[in-house]
Image 1 (cartoon, one colour):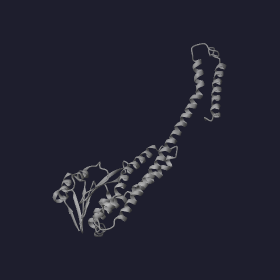
Image 2 (cartoon, rainbow, N blue to C red):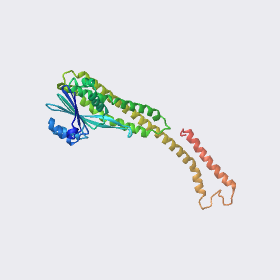
Image 3 (tube, rainbow, N blue to C red):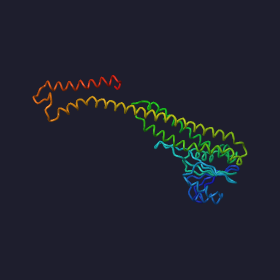
Image 4 (cartoon, rainbow, N blue to C red):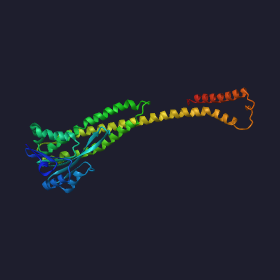
Length: 317
């Protein structure tokens, strides 16, 4: 086993592990210096090297005579913002080596590299079957690390379910945050399924073992994640619709009450407006008659009571 750190001699942020006939070169936060080094040492296509520095790439695989170039995205959950962002891994793979370039956000990849640096058994398990098998192990670790994130989303959905159907609780913001996060994660994971479906065919030339079982297991995990996200999306849409219906019902109930109050008070307003005019009217209070005031008040109450009875008869209240 040989472990190299290029940054000591050439000021490059490059580490590598060599075991048997396989070398793993790991570059965290690559810059133009590391890209120039790769161009000189491996003669990769310039477009692929440019893609390593870009953050707007979609998952893909480019096939060349001597190597493959992969761009892969994995969700990284931000607990503060409560939304997942994509972390990109760029991978060059050929006979005898694998080169990974990333920003250090994918913890399973970092853990696997550190584990291989200090553990002989881990080196044998990951390096012995060639660069293609090592590539599979890296992806397997990254994919499996996403399941706890899904479990967290499912638990949040369970907590939101009871609140979404409680008409006395406002959950629109919580539902919107969950819905945004699920949509974001679907945009990250779904393209990965298409790219990984090509792995079995494209990696055959870089390994001496049958990788179909391993790739099939990896795809099965990715498919489960996609199906879970689909289910989460359907459930959160139900919560959104339920919250909208309950909120609309609450608003309609308030509007109905206010409308009834306005309608019932209308006779008071109408009679008060008529007798408030500066003209002589039958039953006016010019002489200060209490009987006239009582009759006007009873008339108002009678009209309002009749309106309430009519509303109740028509089941409006």
